[in-house]
Amino acid sequence: MSTPSAQVANAAAPVRPNASKFKPVRLLQTPSVFLLLLWMIVPLAMTLYFSVIRYNLMMPEATGFVGLDNYAFLFNDPAFWPSILNTLLLIGSVLVISVVSGTLLAVLFDQPFFGRGIARLLVIGPFFVMPTVAALIWKNMILHPVYGLLAWVMRLIGLEPIDWLAEYPMLSVIMIVAWQWIPFAFLILLTALQSLDLEQKEAAQLDGAGPIRVFWYVVLPHLKRAITVVIMIETIFLLSIFAEIFTTTAGGPGTATTNLAYLVYSIGLQQFDIGIASAGGIIAVVLANIVSFFLVRMMAKNLKGANEK
Image (cartoon, rainbow, N blue to C red; front, side):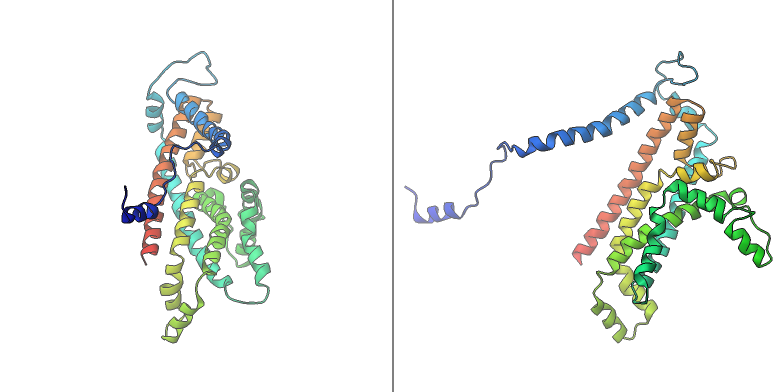
């Protein structure tokens, strides 16, 4: 016979749900999860399989297992290491330009002025332009050495027009891609900036802080998490930049603008070597996962620091 104290303790003890109890709702999730895994695993498995066999569309009879020979051939390709460097240069440059410009534009457009709504729409407009269309606009209407906008401005001030895509190809590609991604950074950072408590800025101003100090010590720390999100998302998408390069420079002159995505395209669809192109695709997947790993760790560290505060 249990004592009254034991009865009270048993009544106060929380009732734990049966973990092994069958939940019918999981049956509704199973088809979507299965399709998602199928959609992800099958292409990856096929790419991995093609990367270890000899598979050239021009020589379909020459097949067989080659192991890591495709990877070795790719590593010895004169265009491989320049493509890695160009990929990193493109990502780093676009990130710096988009984050800095997006932050400054967010601070500017957070101030009240006449026509602010229309101005915001104009700023985010480039983000909705398709990459191929954006590349054609820059190639034929802005950077063209004869009838481009920059050529007209340079002739107007007495300077010789520059053939940007021939003399400064990587800089041209960086400008095109950054023009497309600045609106994305602007949208994220402006949204984060609007959640800033105005009392913090007013308190800093009452303490004698000027606009630069308010921005550096109040606004910028508040945008730290949003900047991390922008860097993570943009980096993942910038690893696969292709349309801008294909439309403007076709990877040239030489390998000046060949990134990893364009190298895989040129090997697979211009040289018709699916095996080596698949090896490049696997390397791109590994590189993307390495970058994503460090970015997620950086974001988690920032979120942890913000929560501790």
